[in-house]
Length: 153
Image 1 (cartoon, one colour):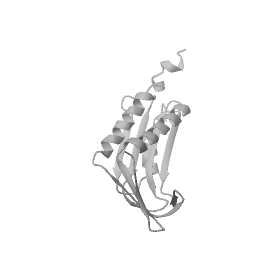
Image 2: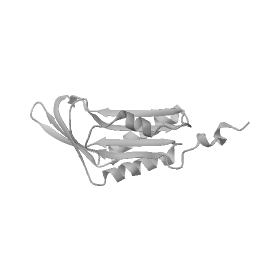
Image 3: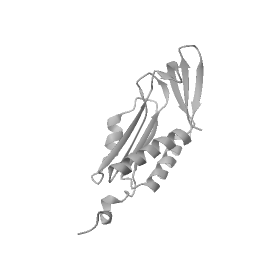
Image 4: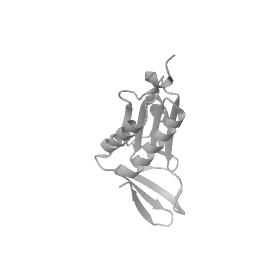
């Protein structure tokens, strides 16, 4: 009997980056989840970032995301780093731009791997690196009349 590491399903897929995008329309959990479906994956981790009604102790009234024209290519670069580090079977990442309301989905990322631990770790790295490295900026307006820009880079 072969050891588990000998099975092709235990390794990364040949082309695991299935969906990368910057969208100016509502994001779909179903689209992202379908994109990372893989029969060899024993674990799928999904992270959903939503617009909350507060930040830094202040009430948020409105929020808008904008990005640099290279943002989608930068998401792909971040995804490729994750794929190089983990046995990813499938990966997807989409981020919203434009005006968003409280409760709207701002970002959805998902990773499927042979095992749950790998999926959790890879998904965490994907969202953390996306937030720190991709040129996407958030403009928040607060109920007290102040506003702020928050950026990834």
